[in-house]
Image (cartoon, rainbow, N blue to C red; front, side, top):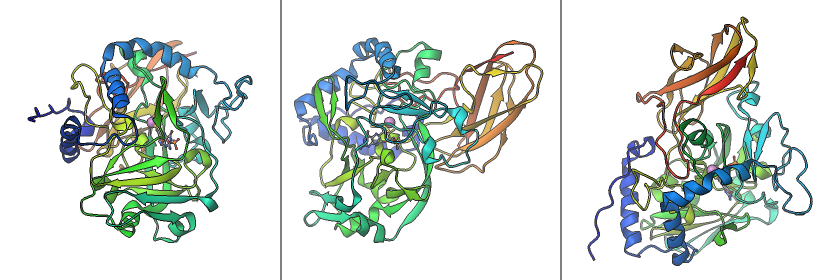
Length: 448
Ligand SMILES: Nc1nc2c(c(=O)[nH]1)N[C@H]1C(S)=C(S)[C@@H](COP(=O)(O)O)O[C@H]1N2
Ligand SMILES: [Mo]
């Protein structure tokens, strides 16, 4: 059977820096169409149905406002549906969620950027956003093992216990975790384009210092075959039910090339064992890629000599909409360039007094080189002072002085440029699920 080549997706930051990854994915799509790929635990029929749903921009876009509203409503307690969630608690999140620090969005907790003003370059675990598809599982490390198995190994399955992993050579690295949908609500609020999914503002990001074992080390010890092409890490949290379809447990394939490059099996965050909400005992850290790649509460990793698929790399975490092929863009990889003020939306600021505006800029691509801010809605721009050296995997903190004039509304903007010359645009290219928002955010404040 002859297969038409899949057109390359609209150029975005994620693909332009990852040409070999998009080539990899085009091969995957061709194989998928030929039916060579296994559907990794979901009935192929269901995947195709979901696929068709995600590709149809109309119904998703129409469903969006309701979804966004539902997601920001106070959640019920899933353990006891009759009981309302305690104030400051989201269902299934273990750590305290004080309202100064977090905004609850369904099963998730977004970090309020204003609460980062007093934190350093690393996000304390107490302030780190939580994105849970279901609920945080409580896992006993003593009885836990990580199973590595599949056709991409030369031999049979290999199990690693918690102490065994901790005894292997370790590495420590700083990396952010950022949800692919971070900033999503701004498609609706400043571009009038409804999208589906959790209505994050800009706080679905945290920067951690992660310690763990290189995945490459563990794969080598499990006797990785040169034929391996994909790995499929899977979480131990509950199966995800979406619109009546059981998608199974959270899992997203990762190309072996990335798995062998800089991926960690992490067991520490900022010098402490991983907190339950962030993947205890062990999670994956996939530097600079979208949050979903960083599978929490790892239970097993399939290593495959054939390409693998799950809902998380087919109907989800691809770009759908005008300008994208019907099967969507390549699966999302790198995060985009963003900036945020450490200030509440709609904050009040005293007139005629000097203020220090602070914020952060970051990217999954090239490091942030400079940041400009405007306090008059974009008419005048000036350079912010950078407080960190540009580096991959982290954000750059910045500040600028501002003495507001008379009372009234004011519009603050922050715009970052990365070291490859990319600048945050005024408008982000729309996609139905609202991923990879990268435009300058219009931050309203009131001068009083
Ligand atoms: N097992 C499992 N892993 C997961 C998820 C999940 O729900 N279950 N959520 C993913 C998503 S969408 C994101 S953005 C990050 C969030 O990591 P955090 O909650 O530690 O901030 O974890 C990813 N890993
Ligand atoms: Mo996410």
